[in-house]
Amino acid sequence: MRILITGASGQLGSELKDLLLDNTEKECYFLDRKQLPLDQIQIIQDILGMYQPDLIIHAGAYTAVDKAEEDQVNADLVNHLACEEIAQYCHLHGTRLIAISTDYVFDGSSASALTETAETAPINVYGQTKLAGEQAIQKWCPEAIIIRTSWVYSTYGKNFVKTMCRLMAERDEVGVINDQIGSPTYAKDLAAALLKIADSSKWEAGIYNYSNEGEISWYDFAVAIRDYRSFNCQVKPIPTSAYPTPARRPKYSLLDKSKIKSVFAVEVPHWEVSLAKMLAEEFKN
Image (tube, rainbow, N blue to C red; front, side):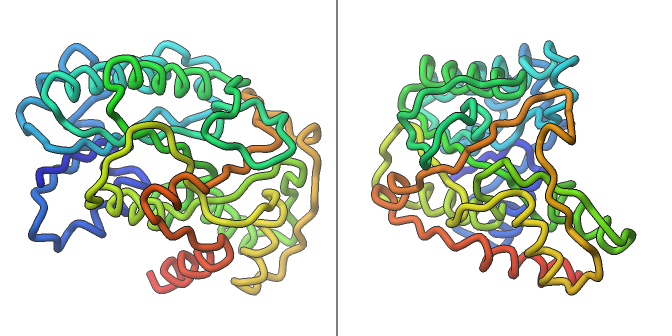
């Protein structure tokens, strides 16, 4: 199988590279923003044609959530119009497509775990462009699989876990939002789930959710990070209103993972287990 992965230098792309590095059964191409500039949509299909993949895992995205509020044109190019080009290529050439989306397609007003059929209503530009990307994929390549995920972290790149570790090592106190609820996603777990789907004998198109198990706030997450690393730092709970950002965040975005577990027999670790694994890996490095 010939697999092409976009966003190769991101958190998920880097974890996929680690898992596939020694795989002799798959011919893998890892394209970062230099090799596949997603903001140059006129050349995307030509570049994909050079590799002729059997499967594309589209992990590349414009993920600067706050910056997107004032950089709407580029956010739309990368998160929406690039998806359209990739979906058109896949449909024309019979290429399978797994695309990564986000919990930010929801408005955060739910009181229970969100299923794949929950109503979408993004409240920021990032979420709007990601939803437009989903819709373009479903229009041009209805046979694609779209996976929504949330709160992604890894030993690679910039993320909440690494930021907290740095701040807690430097400060006596940090304030963390306690009224945004969801579940984190260890990118290595998501990467393993994607490869399980890729290797599955069945291919059921549609939207799926994936995050680690459990329901927490960012505050709960920070406390767990502190306790695991034994930082001598007080974690102070603060409301969203006390930490205004250019882009609004959904207050509640816990994802229901029943569908992906049922269809593809994907195992979903609890967030505490995955956090411990990541921090052990980070500390080792």
